[in-house]
Length: 50
Image (cartoon, rainbow, N blue to C red):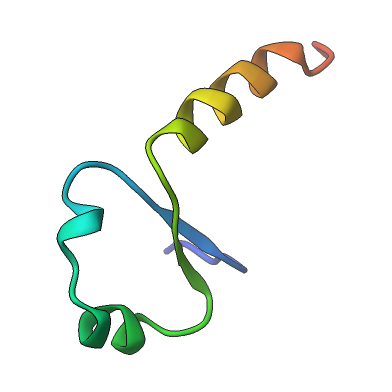
């Protein structure tokens, strides 16, 4: 089981979603551009290693 506060949905097929489909997803789902994955991945590498 997964618990989340917000889901970031991106990728090539995310832009194909209709506005009614996005509305059904709810407020805790955010459609993001593909560049968000690149920025997030680069940020992970900058985190301190424990």
